[in-house]
Image 1 (cartoon, helix red, strand yellow):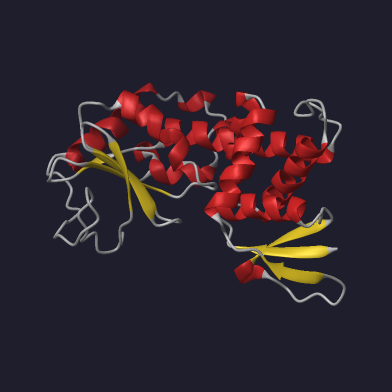
Image 2 (tube, rainbow, N blue to C red; image 1 turned 180 degrees about the vertical axis):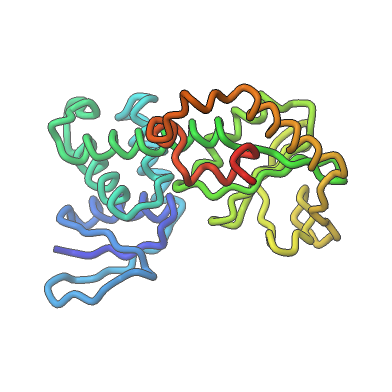
Length: 259
C-alpha cells in the first residue's frame, strides 16, 4: 500500500492519477496533506499538483468517458470528501485499464460510489437553487449568505444567472470563503471577508463596501411572513413530512422560518 498526499485540488487529484500510471502504482490510498496520519505499514509520497500532468489525464478521461460520466466526475469532486476523491482515483484507474466502456458497470464499487456521490451533490445543488433567499442592500445589490454541505456554487451559477438577469447579486459561501457575483453582464468568482466586506466585488481590490440593507427590506420580509402565515393551514401541518422535504439546516435561508 502506498499513500499519496495531495493538496485536495482538482489538479492535484489528476496529478495523482498521472503518477499512478507513471510508476505503475495502483494500490494507492489518498490522503490530504493537512490530514495525513503516520502509518508504519505504508510508504507516503507527496504528489505535487502539476497542470501539465493534470491536463493529460483530463484529456484522456474526456476521450474515454461520455459527457454524463464527466459530469458525474465533476459533481463527485465538488463533494470535497476524501472518500469521494478515493472513488474518483480508483474509477479513473479502472477506466484507463479497461478496453471497453465501464462507466455504467455499477457492480464495481467505485463506479457505484461515484454515482452515489453525484446524487448527493446534485440534491444539494437543487436545494440551494430552491432555498436561497436574497437581501437587498442600500447599494442595490442582492446578497445571499449560504453554507452548503458541498461546494455547489459552480453548479448553481447558471441557474441564478438565467433567473435574475436584471439585478446585481452576490451568493457568498460562508464556509468556503468565496462567492459568485453577477454584474448584469457576466458572473465573477470573488473572495471576500464576510465579516468586513471591504473588498471590491468586481475586481478583488480594496474598496469600502458595506452590507447595509435597503430600508424597505424589513417590510418585504414581514409581507412574505404574513403571506406564508395566511396560506398555511395549521390543522394540516405535518412537521415530519415537512422536514423530509425541507431539512432544518436550510431553514436559516428562509424568511418565513425566521421569527
